[in-house]
Length: 196
Image (cartoon, rainbow, N blue to C red; front, top):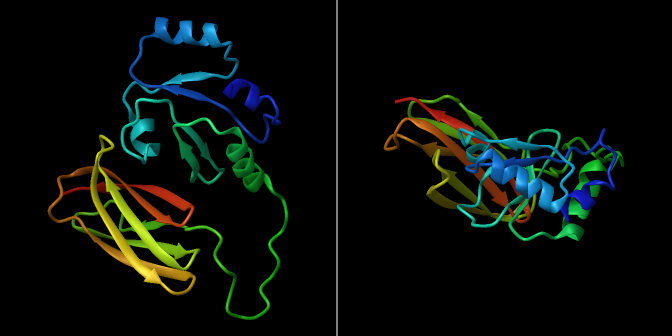
């Protein structure tokens, strides 16, 4: 299904890739031939792509993931839902210009705009994010294996805007972590390196 789905897009705008982790070349080739896959299937031999972009724990099913041109995950799900995926892609590819603000207060955020600093760090990192939808913001920290090691509910926030949270890492082992911030249907992830 995914290969038919992908044929409806201009390859200069949307690139479709399969990423395989943990299977041998013969198994992968047999799968490609059985299902008539025409898009490239890449091998994630060291798991680095999996760690960087897998933000929902371990799933026994393939994950469909849409990543925008800024490297931000806009869709991640284990159930194939072409209509939702089309809606997400339409939103990303939309060329409708954002109207200028009516006053000097700036524009209303339309994405989380997640940033971490310092990064790398040796003790703590400031997590900077936009609140797009007033309400709760959930911060989740994953280790290099994709295991959730911390989940914090921030807020509630009564208005949109830019906020910060200090993420304390003093009791964590050195290594690579993934910080994910969710606000309503918006979600962004960033890699964080801890050196103790």
